[in-house]
Image (cartoon, rainbow, N blue to C red):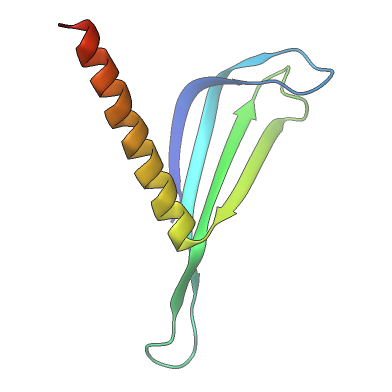
Length: 95
């Protein structure tokens, strides 16, 4: 089942005006379901960003990547590390 989230953002395509607005972020797991018991496996994750708007080109501009489970976990770890780094920088301004 895909997860649907919308965030403020933009898309800039060559030769087109900047399209600002809501960017939808969808992500979902991809399973390889086998007919034999205990042989199904997680293949990876799909991560898609979709932008709607009059300057986005077609009706919907889409970017999609597929990540292995390891790449997905690495991405989550990298986002957590960046969050912690920014929190430390913020704290230095509060002193």
